Length: 245
Image 1 (cartoon, helix red, strand yellow):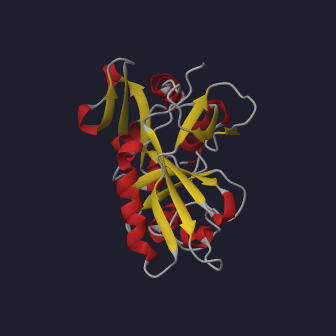
Image 2 (cartoon, rainbow, N blue to C red):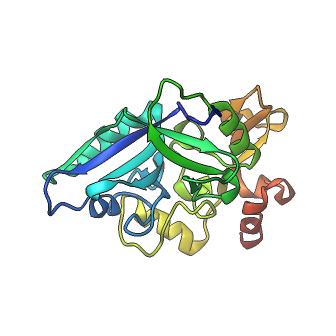
Image 3 (cartoon, rainbow, N blue to C red):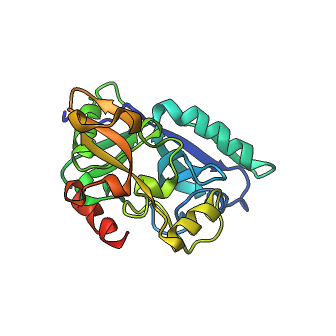
């Protein structure tokens, strides 16, 4: 069996407990992206100041349910945070340990292209099996080689647009309000993205600006001022941003 399971990922399931409840509408007022249309999409739950708390992929499920593909270490915290916003809405929220997240680099049958970049490969969900083999290291190496940050360790407490969320299709500016929307929209309208997360060679990483380091890959994720970034070192999918800025 080809190794494809991402053991570092988990799924949070949101289930309506009343026929008139709308889980998508609930999330629409919380997450950065439009979850009312075609799924999966990439999105985040922000602080009121617009800083990243949780990033995730939003998947459709049967009977009005929605699944959130998130970091395994953050899954319980995400479920608890969403429960705080639930108030009296009739929605069950919890980690679903019966399903796993899978990934492969090349397109194939039965999966969905990564909504951030097609070159990131495809993902799919499947019941957990004792035969599942880990693909976490291969996925991380491929993702970082493409210059894409992910997860709280690399993006936590960073303004959402500074994580390259626009270029990675993680925000919708025409969907209405969500937590952190005011500052995020203001930054976009004023083109005030003064810093960006960049994957850089570990040898040139600035320890004071470093969010994460991967010695085995020789790479690091730094939070850099745009003025200090050489556009020639930016990934192709991000290069135009420096021209605009």
